[in-house]
Image (cartoon, rainbow, N blue to C red; front, side):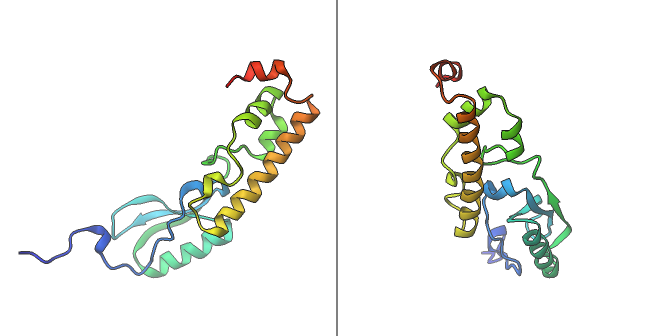
Length: 153
């Protein structure tokens, strides 16, 4: 019987992944590269801002378990929560504003399985965006029967 461990999960690691779900990706910052232990690559860790990403990259680099590490800002390309940016809200049509108002999830719902720190960051950011959506909807005359019918369910 061969006692050698072949399961990648059982290999000893110096760096322990934090396991942030991609719900934090709305911040757009991540560490990318290749994991020499699992032979995986791409986005290795989602991070809460640029400083966090740079600190995580330093830890990963020091472990010697990764290569080709770099910090990537994907704020304009990633929105896992489905929430628009404030810039999107400012340029949106009344129809789009009404659709967001009707169909967006509760602020923070996309991060309920993340750490408390990440959840609070997502909740605060999404709450600010939702308040602006509500304000733009009021400024546009509110959710009229016509707009509601146009948006549908």
